[in-house]
Image (cartoon, rainbow, N blue to C red; front, side, top):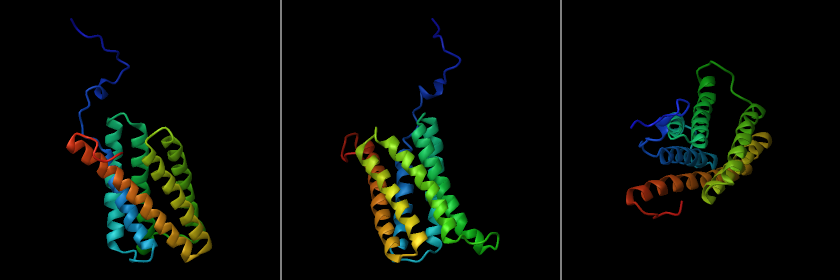
Length: 196
């Protein structure tokens, strides 16, 4: 007896046994956010370690995680990791292009506009998380608050607001890393070690 398969159905998702890409995406976002936030706190300069991490781990690794989420039929994961991956690549490009003489450096209002668009996106993701795990919801709320503080810092040139943004970035990054590592540890141990 042969099984009837609906030709409109994509059965590749029914037999998917690929790895969970969320820990990669969460750690890539979280660790990159942590590193840049240490800079925003004024503890390190904006130099090659930050740029390399934004391009390759925050950027490329998250785009890969997003593509893997597509394979898992997870639209939220695809959009979140894919978009934030390209955010980090765009962020690094904004810093690199003026150094290469290929574009003018953005002024505070241009950079605030760039961040504001991403803040609206993060707000949309936060609304999605209202039906998800509370820690993920708090993480996305922290990202929204981080962007608000960074926009305010650009528009006011107030170093205290930038440092507050750095502190909020530490919170957002640490929460993302916690969820990513927590999912990984839970999977490896086969039991819920971390509440995520």
